[in-house]
Image (cartoon, rainbow, N blue to C red; front, side, top):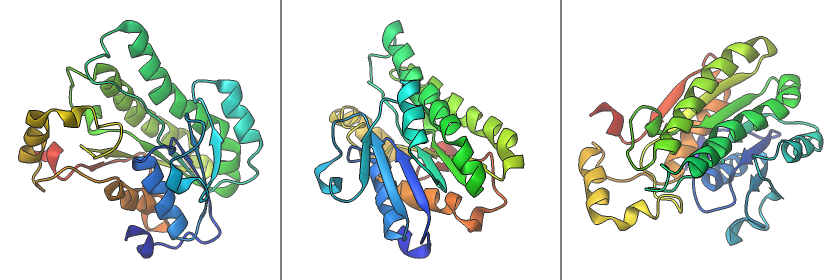
Amino acid sequence: MAANQFDFSGAEVLVIGASRAGIGAAIARAFQEAGATVAITGAEPEPAEEDRDRFRYDRLDVTDLDAVRALAEGVERLDVLVNCAAITSRGEEMEPAFFQRVVDVNLHGTFRCASAFHPQLRESRGTVINIASMYAMFGSPRNPAYGASKAAVAQLTKSLAIAWASDGIRVNAVAPGFIVTEQSARSRTDPAHVAAVSARTPMGRWGQPEDIAGPVLFLASPLSGFMTGTCLAVDGGYSVV
């Protein structure tokens, strides 16, 4: 497993948006397996059953600035912040109110959390990893809000990397391709869509959440110590075709 290649013993890690079976939860488990103390948040009352006794959990609405700040005030130390909270709804995002909601969660939520934990990250000279998407580079007729918000997350990553470099904070992002998660379940009910994705992807399959964890741990580790402001595509080669 990816965690076996890294040592995060003694590190304090917070993964925002890890309450469901998906990318955030896989990242949290990988950090824990690599020795870190890991806390997670999510919008649900409690996390997935397999994680209920595994991590400290805080229910968090990332659109609530007061709630984000209150969470940050209760955290004394933080070495790694992973911003993974996101929503989407295939085929419904042309509705203006929902479009606004998606951007508020995915983009503004990422900034709220990064900003709130800036003091702890400055103290630890820590790292931020934002979860963008391959839709940061491609248009999507059924997910316009998601694509717009994730493109903005990629740009925000660059801007924060410059702004916080003097604080010793590195800020990078990962752009997953098509991953098998609860969030993608709706799109995976379309056999033609599933087949088209697999056919275009050079590696010939959809990704698993664990495929994203390794690159995230790399970006949080000293091995990427001269990397900041980058956005790594982790998509099985989909974006190079």
